[in-house]
Amino acid sequence: MATLSLAAILAENARRRPTKTALVEGDLRLTFAEVWRSALAQAGALVGLGVRPGDRVALMAPNTAEFPHAYYAIAAAGGVVVPVHLLLSASEVEHVLKDSDATLLLCHPAQAGTGAAAARALGVRTVTLGAEFEQLAAAAEPLPAYVTRDADDPAVVFYTSGTTGVPKGAVLSHFNLVMNATVNAFDANDIRPDDIALGALPLFHAFGQTVSLNSTWRAGATLVLLPRFDAARAIELMVKEDVNTFHGVPTMYVALAAAAADAGALPELRICISGGASLPVAVLERFEAAFGARIYEGYGLSETSPTASVNQPLFGTKAGTIGHPLWGVDVEIARADVEGRVELLPTGELGEVVIRGHNVFSGYLGRPEATAEAVVDGWFRTGDLGTKDDEGFLYIVDRKKDVIIRGGYNVYPREVEEVLMRHPAVAQVAVIGLPDELHGEEVCAVVVRAGDASAEATDITDWSKEHLGRHKYPRRVEFTDAMPLGPSMKVLKRELRARYTA
Image (cartoon, rainbow, N blue to C red; front, side):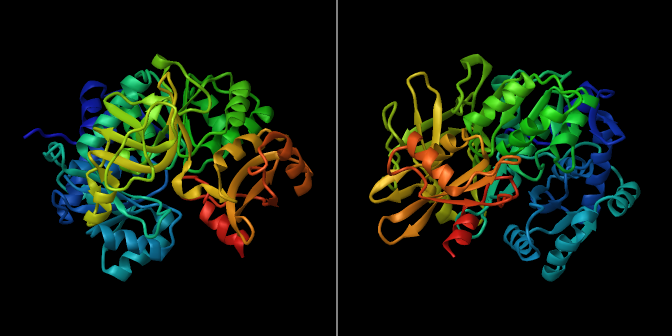
């Protein structure tokens, strides 16, 4: 039986590059050997607390040094990490703890109010990261090495942001996560040991965890943590620490492009990766012009470890696409309206994006029916609509559920958003369908104005008429100061729909 542990990513660096700087947070600078020593001591403390191989340990922490230490400590002890989103309410945290059957919560002091309250309600033991956990680690016998795990054993359970009903736990194996980190580092991109990456994406989320933490360390590179994203602060920190690699979601690229004009100096970026949501081409162009760096847009889901497809230097890049599938992964387009089997479509046709490969999860924790619905004929059905062109580039058109049907015509919000992002008064836009007696649904654009722009709804609508088909342009335009964002920085369209339907 092949064995493998996620903990090997850190353990091997401690063996191969012990004195290399692994982690920077503020004034704190730690080598790979130091981080690994700390993780083994904390793993000893976890074993002392009764954590046995396969036990699920919840981890609730921001992007501070405590997160990677605890993350690899849980893996080293043979436990399963259950990362907890920091924006959840106490009752939502309770759901994650209860559903995952977590035996312990490791909680950062900043999250203690919400996390500890949820754990208390369920009788789950809480250990506070920082002083309390360090005391336990100092008193414990450090593990001599990480605990042996089978390659297919669970390593992490990600709770998907629940666009449909209650969040479900996607179970990812050591094999899933080690492979995704490895092919991200060495096949999709040329990540080098002397690279320095900014860790601004939340590490509790699949994108930040795999791409920022695991892939960076898989390549032996340095991770600089930024606990709270602020564009001006991020630029300053990247310049100060010689950061050449940035991973972000579209909202971060919007903010960085705007902040670049006022910055005293800009970092020299070699690799910029975007994911988490579709990156409007206008934002890509704005950022690339400001920073003189190319963005490689990719796509993935918690259920696919997460990366499935990305623009890769090897294949060339194409703005507005998610590039080509990752090494060892197939991404195809299937008929969206066929249930129970996967019927692949020819090049150029619109359908549901389906994925198979080493990145596809083991299933939803304790939900065999949901798993059987999601994984059909060996393919994971994403619920996203897309196409593939004759060069093999993949395009995401929209979520199956977000498509607006106006008067019998399909309107894809992503397409309308791409056009509206080119309006000079628009800093950010989300397009949603609202109930309409006459047309079934009406197209509504929710806009965050750019800077001191004073555009009115009629200006946006009139401009849209010139650039969009008659069934596509937004009849209704609403203005807001800020979009409601989920824990992974995605715009929560369900919240906008609820707000503007009312």
